[in-house]
Length: 196
Image 1 (cartoon, one colour):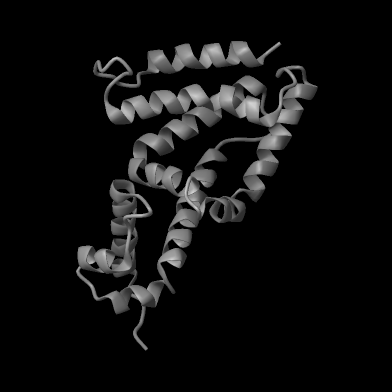
Image 2: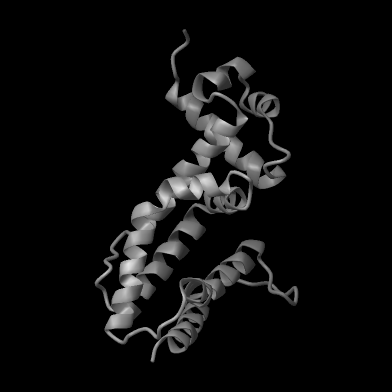
């Protein structure tokens, strides 16, 4: 039996991420991946049992890295303003420093593999964020709001701005760069919308 080569495995993962970002899940295939990596298809099956296993494992790994970053310096007993600011900074950091992984994760979340990937990785994160939200409501730092509405207001504008930054242009087609000034403006509006 052939042994795992971690360097080759890392190359396979990175090429798979690149291919998913460029071609989507539907355009992704093991034969094409093997060719891109300069390895035989049999080599891929040392690491993954099939295409679905590869996609699921890559999604889980990216998601674990993402959620670990989201909890960096975060505590559910932080004030609402400080906790939300921490979440924004962590999300900005991950999105700007791991752009391919962040984009791939979003693609995989919207795919048929999304539910299985998210279910595997969000347990502790969901618990911590729920505790944070309920604590903020209890301390009267956050207006009572359903989770889905909270998420869309708290992070929707941030992700829209980060997407414009990734594309390099605004909705009007003008060049766009996400700046600290824009971040502060958006954050303050979000805070105003969610606090009593």
